Length: 169
Image (cartoon, rainbow, N blue to C red; front, side):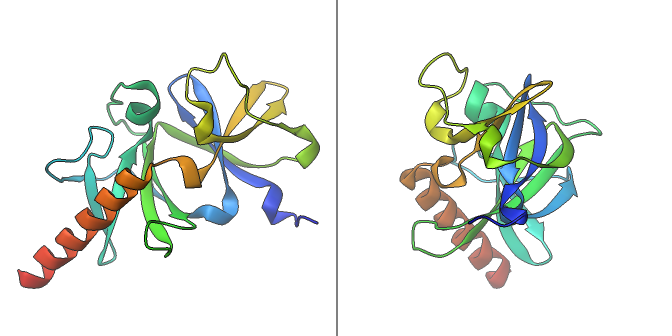
């Protein structure tokens, strides 16, 4: 049996699509800030931010899904999410650059369908499902599949290197 919070999703814009992520995974929403570049990372991982003394890797979701960069503007946000299991089995915070945050919606399970097997502009393995709304569909992200094991490993290593550099400095 699911609780009320389990059916709440933070919705946001990426490209021309509306996405949602389970509210229980969202830690906070930040105004877009400077991202410190990290060498040798894929283009969709522009770098890291310092969040109250913690190094948080940042993912450009538009670049990851649509292979195009989004130029930050006044509506651009970084959504800090907690990935339930990273490579070493521990939880990991990641910042998601999104074009605009919309609202928190309560979506009954009966309005959520499995991801389509074809016809989507993004890989369906990134999706947990699709929610039917009067205005169209909301693509619900699956945080566990957003990054590959190799990408998560690279983020863990980047985070460790950044922490070590700050400690040594």
